[in-house]
Amino acid sequence: MSAFTQLPLGRPIPASPHAVSCSLPTMRSVRGYEERNPEIVRHLTNGYPRFVVHPFARRLAEHLTQTHGLAGRKLWLTSSARMAAALTAQLDGSDATSFAHGGLHGVSHPDTPELTAQAKVFLQNRGGFLSSREAEDHLVRLGLLPAVHHEESFPGDATAEVRRHLLPALPTATADDLILANCGMSAIWAAFRAVAELQAARGRTVWLQLGWLYLDTIALLQKFTASPADYVYIRDILDLDALQRIFAAHGPRIAGIVAEVPTNPLIQTPDLPALAALCRQHGARLLVDPSISSVFNVEVLPHADVVVSSLTKYTASEGDLTAGLCAINPAGPDAAALRPRIAAEVEPLYARDLARLAAQIGQTKTVLAQIHANTAKVAAFLAGHPAVREVYWALQPAGATNYRRLARTPDATGGMITFTLKKIGALEAFYDRLRLPKGPSFGMKTTLICPFMYLAHYDLVTTPAGLAELAASKLDPDLLRLCVGTEPVDEIIATLAEALG
Image (cartoon, rainbow, N blue to C red):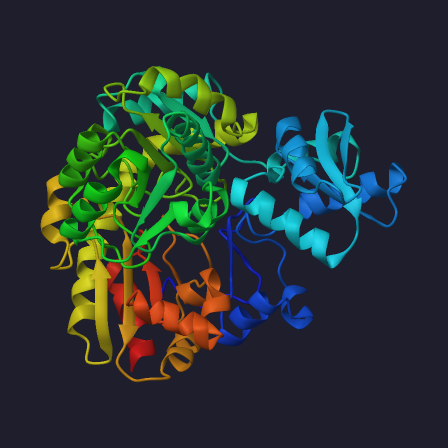
């Protein structure tokens, strides 16, 4: 019997109230999710936590709205008092007010579509929503839930346990160099903010985006560089000559580079040692995000000033929490200044999330070994299938040499594969037929696939200008993102073959 059956719309992936993914089984459901179609949205009980307010947090906010006289106002519950203050400042002039009660913090504002959208995007970009487990604890305390969801948690010092497993993957770091965050975007924001402040004091305000990055990382760079002219997008990550020309002309003004290694979604790997040498030569700082592959698979810290990573991926492999990491290179010129700045800026993990992460992190190497064995076989199958046009993964020819230079072992590829279909317009029929779990996120024991550009950049796939921008970056709007899990590989391949026809 196959491991895979079509999951109904909205089914949490995995089957936990804290799941970070949910089933979007058809292209109609994907479009409805993006367009907030009530017929689709009413089936969604959860979603990726930085994009969808968890039902526990919604229920708690509704209760507090009713009991604190906030009728006609929208209440956002935030991850900390500091995040509430930051959101209040962001909504300056809108009658936004901070909220605090019983250890909870948030912001209320007039319930208008414009303010709601502004607040939601701010919290999404920064990872500022209240944790589902923290909301759950408050609901139980208030008698609105009978008990918390039963799950395995680490009983001891969870921070020490997480660091104990991370240090062998980051051997040049000390425990003080590893700063945990409530999600990957909080880590990225904290590192960017800390480095940007140090570099701005030196007259350096220009930031380079190396290749197409994850959407919220792009948003961070576009919104928080000093001016539009200080944000520079480098389309071709393999064109080192172009980078050298930029540094030759503008080196004294360049604050740093943000690079994913490999990139999302084309799984390209730059020449990281050469990139690091260029930054060191010109006084720029290098922020490296290896989330697509995992810090357990690639040795990037010696080349970076700060490694920023989502521990939601691979490390929290059950798929039921978000977490992030900033790893500071102790040999970097700003290491001493960055430690306190980043530690002060990140949103910390809620205690129960940290204990849950500590309970899972010990499985990482075993989970990755199975994922690696499966991924190579799935990539080979897709590359040889007549219906598939392009296949991208860590060992694709264009970037394999650069990737192998960083990989800890020859098979340490991570589970990410993206691919396109030969036949124009074939996406919908393939996606709707496919029985694999379909939803956001990746790096779980569960195989997951999604039409990535539709979920991440719906505004681009639905407008002529957006499609032109994707084409300029050599991105197919119908690109599929598959992250291979630990299920029997023959069943993964058979399920793909069935849908490909």
